[in-house]
Every structure is written in structure tokens, then in C-alpha cells.
Image (tube, rainbow, N blue to C red):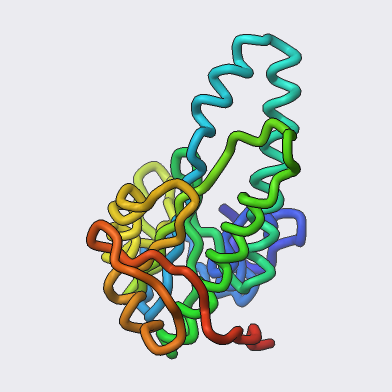
Amino acid sequence: MATGAIGTDLSVYLPKWLATRLREGREPSDAPFVEGGNGAVLFLDIAGFTERTDKLAQHGARGSEELSNLLEDCFATLIDIVNEHGGDIVAFAGDGFVALWQSKDISYATHLAAQCGLALQQAMDGGPPGGGNELRQRISIDAGKVYRCKVGGFDGRWHFLVVGDPIQRVGTAYRKAHVGDVVLCDAAWRALAESCEGERLNDVYRLNRLKSRLLLAVC
């Protein structure tokens, strides 16, 4: 991967944190790195996506076209919502994605992630009646220390990853959520306990509402 300045066309395909490093010339081409910091992590899983794609695959070219439209309508909308709430999509995983908010103020980052989670929930629940939208979501949110990494180097191949306990925990927590829910892990619940309403559910907390709305800080 080229380092230094990057064009707009390339930057839209990269996580924001990596695009920033490249733009600022902080990305050496031949060295690994690890950067740690506090953050909130959101994982969204699209329930029913695999079943829907399997059905469409049985219809040949027409099914492929419908699948393309489904991806555009669904994922594009969800990605826009994450961007509008200041999140950085750092990985696509299976039928969903992982988004990150980093801030020295962990409560601020978690609140933004929770606002985004509720907005994603509303968007998935707000499909047109009778429109055949069989897709719903499960969303999990956690907070804590996360690490942005560059690993590899064999044969000149490098991989850029975001890792940490919160990412592992959201990958477990979403399985405990009901379809349509936004759930908080313990650390995220503690960060939001005074500013949200929710209830205990299968070792996680279902987020029902936030008592206030934060504005996204403009850098």
C-alpha cells in the first residue's frame, strides 16, 4: 500500500483512522505498529440476511440484481448513519460490521455509539409496510481499551486491524440480544447508566432510550 498523501477516491475505502495516518504521512511502509486508546465499539448483525441471499441466489441474474439493490439500500443507508454519528467502520464481519468511536472521554464515545445504535435500529425498523423487507438487526455496544495495529510483513503484505477486549465482547453479546434490540455490555452500561434507560437481558442490558442527545464535536 502506498504511503503519504492519498486521494479522495482511495480514502473512502479505508477506515478513517488509517486514512488519517496516511494523509499525515505517519504510515511507514516497512514497520508494524500498535496504538492504544479508549473507545466505544458497536457491532451490527443483520438477522435474516443469509436466508434472504440464499433465496435470491436461486433466481439467477434477476436474483443477483435484487441482491445488489438490497446491499445498496441496506448497507449504504446503515453506513451513512454511522458516518453521521462520527463512527468509523473498521471491519465488515459476516452479515454485519464493527464501528468504532475513540475519545479520551469514554462516556462521550459510548453515548455517541448508543445514539448511533438507536438510529440504526430505527432505520431497520422503519422499512415500508408490505415492502418485503425481512431484514432486522441485532446491535451490541461495549467500551474500553482498543488497539489499532499494523501486522504482517511477510512478502511485503501488511494487515491493518483494530483489536481489543470490547470487540471480543460485542461479538458475544449480540447473540444474547433479541432480533431488533440494541444491547450494552457491562462497561458500556456503566458509562451510560446515568443517561439512559434499559433493562437486564441475558447478561447484557437492553437499551430502551437515551435521556439526552449529544452533539458530535467538530474537529
